[in-house]
Image 1 (cartoon, helix red, strand yellow):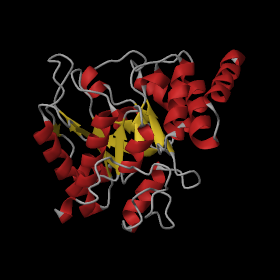
Image 2 (cartoon, one colour):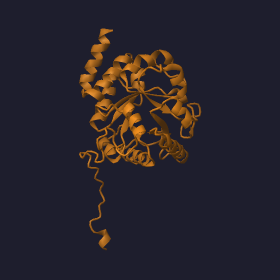
Image 3 (cartoon, one colour):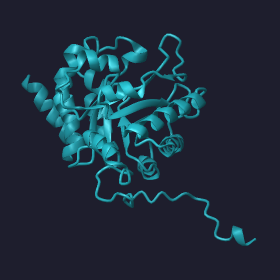
Image 4 (cartoon, rainbow, N blue to C red):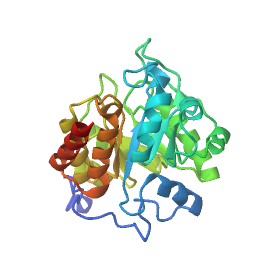
Length: 294
């Protein structure tokens, strides 16, 4: 039959071809957004580099006290000069982050589970849009469980936040969750990041994987890569370097900064990779030089 002629089976992500609808704005997929959205995105992604260093310390919303974050009031102010965005709960922001810090704000808006029941796939929208506006949030972060038991409810959460965000020009960041039993393959991340982006998110937070450049190419909004579990400093900087080389718009380091023996120096080294083009080896040498001066 004629409609079977030339059927294209293999996917071609054209990873080497830049995103086509950039216009004169520095954030992928944001050309057609309104001024308010663009202003918030510019608070997240540096207009000079188009990239971001996020610092996540929202772990307490399901883990409680975390090693390295026992005293948010002491550790967070030492790190804000070296990151572009803080990702946190409203409770932590109001109590422990100086309002004059100058960082963008990624506000955690979903909650509902804890490490006690070991099931994190069922959450609710816990922060309404009015409070996000009061806190001057630059984006609202929503945990999204694609392929997990809580997929439907998390997509409903995501939709609610996206709809409210469009109403008041606040971007939404869909956070791709990976449970213990979920695969961490490029096949999964291509599926999950694309679904989240097509729901209407302006940013996707995900993980690094093989063929990462294809994941980035297939996603029409910027991907920020989560640092994940604590790694030795040289390995964490290699991860950051691979992410940036693979097309990520930034990294969101949490444990790999606050659980480092030298968190401030580590934050500065990550910044060198993301914004200044340092290789992982150059950044690690920079980290060691700073650490040895202490």
